[in-house]
Image 1: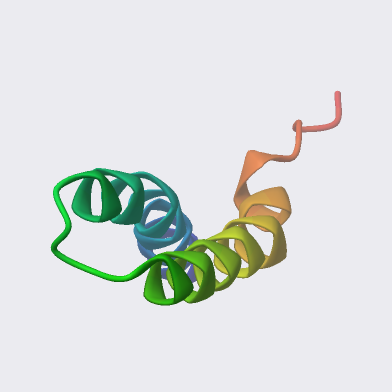
Image 2 (image 1 turned 180 degrees about the vertical axis):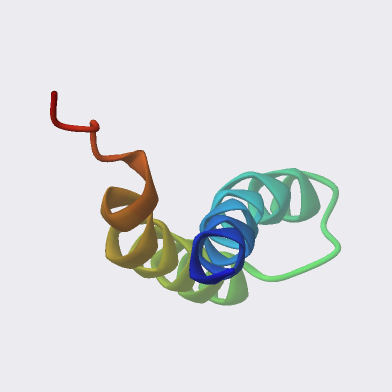
Length: 58
């Protein structure tokens, strides 16, 4: 259950690193908002992905 929650947060972080680039390219958001969203997405990804991506020990 917790792994699913972590995966959802991780993929949300990835979306926050890709979508703002497209939105700033189309002038839908400002570059400052783009930077803020990218930082939040990066922090979400790096804070949650190691917990569900770690290798299983043999």
